[in-house]
Amino acid sequence: MHFVKMHGIGNDYVYLDAVTDPSIERRADLPDLARRISDRHRGVGSDGLILVCRPGAGAASRRAAGCGTHPGAHVRMRMFNADGSESEMCGNGVRCVAKFAHDRLGVRADPILVETGRGSLPIAYETVAGKLTRATVDMGEPILEPSRVPVAVGKLEVAGEHRYRLRTGDDAWVGSFASMGNPHAVFFDADNPGLRGDGLAAIDLARVGPRIERHPAFPDRINAHFVRVQAPGEAAMRTWERGAGATLACGTGACAAAVAGARLGLLDRSVTLHLPGGDLGIVWSAATNHVLMTGPATDVFEGQWRE
Image (tube, rainbow, N blue to C red; front, side):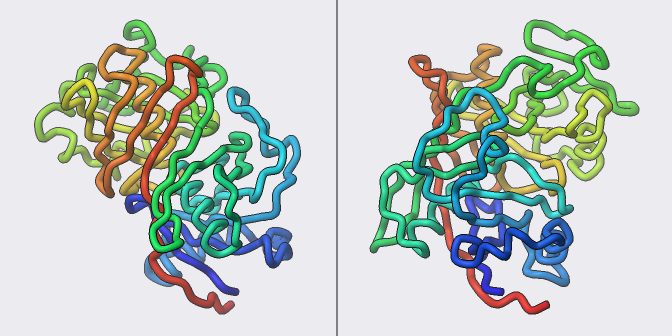
């Protein structure tokens, strides 16, 4: 089975062409395949598996509100984390899906429309020597009502406007929540003094991340992001992704962090977020309420997966 490995600022996935071969999507063992192919010692190695499929997933691809659907989507994305769990959306991954569609499937529309669990997302792009290199994704409107993220706020403590305190063992974190089709908790240095100075770099994600991800307030688990604001238009961020662990980047998480920061008065609506794998530009439009994410999409290598 032919595969392509790509990354968006270090957030790496293995991509399979289920447009040319739809039988790939019909496999009953996709969660197990994701675990095996993502294994960094015995497999290709990645943060997960993404299938590029024929469009037409119907209601399943539009279950999250806040993002309209567009008729005539060109491809559809299904995304599995490294632990085999299926997620609704991946911001860095969807840019690479657009690259796959453009470079390998011959899609030349601009924007390219990709169906996701978040809805159909229009993706504008830039090319170099005929290859897609950079893309801007209209991520739609953020979901901010805690019950729709979803977050059971009754299991947390109110810590201010749009702020909640959660306790994990001996730790206490003050965070804000948003969904970009998948759930995010964002913790800023303004509310968590341990993240100031060198604290962001020193945080033990392997210890803290799983405790937050599986806190009882998060029925679908959650992605956790830790942010140090450097200026109104700039911040540094580290991430623990549900189902994948510590990753070099999270596109939907960067969008959630930008929105949460603007809501709290900590960030402007147009920001650059510095992630371990690289930078993303995020704009939360006051006119449309949509979030636009801009970043690169990069080939790593391709090969044959033998079973």
